[in-house]
Image 1 (spheres, helix red, strand yellow):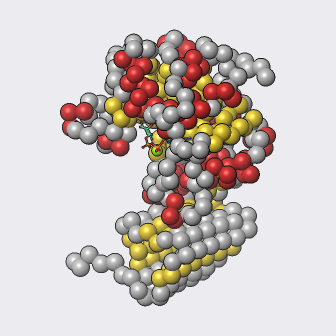
Image 2: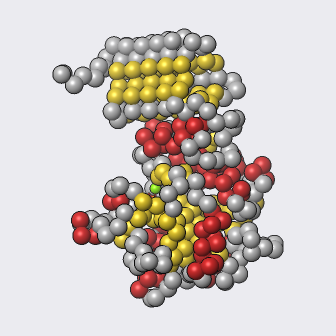
Image 3: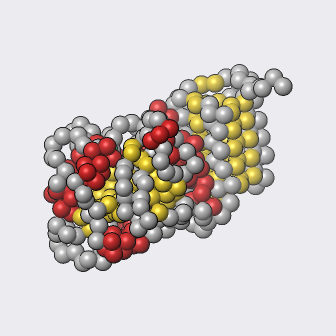
Length: 366
Ligand code: GDD
Ligand code: MG
């Protein structure tokens, strides 16, 4: 296969350990949970395609068997997709090295690498351009966040060259910048081949610090486009709503952007109120007088009359009883929450659980 310099290949990292969404969506790995009506991964694949990428290798480990039946060879998205499954999770660097044999790129060609849980408006072509202009070994998309502790800190000099990489800083002294690794890279192919094979390697804790110590050129590209790590259910709900609202750009949102996205076979009562980027999945039902704001109601779920739902995820086939209030809650697949309950502030209902009517109230006792 030939490959032009204007269309780099990409690796998408979608493995690793289970996620916090896992007990709530049973056998669906996070990249396959629908965001704005399609498996989240579709947005990343479609954005890469729109930036000219044609060949993408998915590096998977956890629940790998669900990706290929859905995305197949990628032709529906105009892509050529390949899948590589690790027997044991190899870490981010190990996963990258493990798919090297599937790349067609030459040693000096740029290869894009994406964390599989990021929703962003990153200008992918600009990152490749930065990489070429700087003549870097690796280039990283960086973003600024208020609290960088859950991320990889990446200070740069005045020219954007990376001076250190500090993954998940532990002490206040380590917090030297608010610039973090946004989880999108360009690697020269030869750098990928230099990662040790057949053992777990963390690109954040081993590869980047090692390259810096050896004098390699790591270039950072800071920008302020939309960026969200979907690592928590709350972030996932936010991301889905932002896709629907058009704040997070994706060519894969089915339908026009707006206040709501109601999939074809959903049944929404005329006086139900759907706002704030709410998604109602296929075959789901929202009954009269219900209000759903900034939330994701997955396929086949039922929201009964007068229920009020905000910033919440209602799993596939779940049922929310009449007048029940959800705010910042996550309801697992096929769980039933009876009428007249109130679940707020991070409440999590496991898959298939049953909460009888009138059982839970939330009160600050003020
Ligand atoms: N194939 C494979 N194998 N993929 C993996 C493995 C593995 O063993 N481990 C992690 N991944 C994938 C995850 O599926 C995810 O898409 C990506 O690599 C990053 O892993 P996370 O577990 O989500 O890491 P994080 O969010 O704590 O931190 C990473 O992302 C931050 C930005 O969101 C780091 O790269 C940080 O430096 C960065 O700031
Ligand atoms: Mg993450």
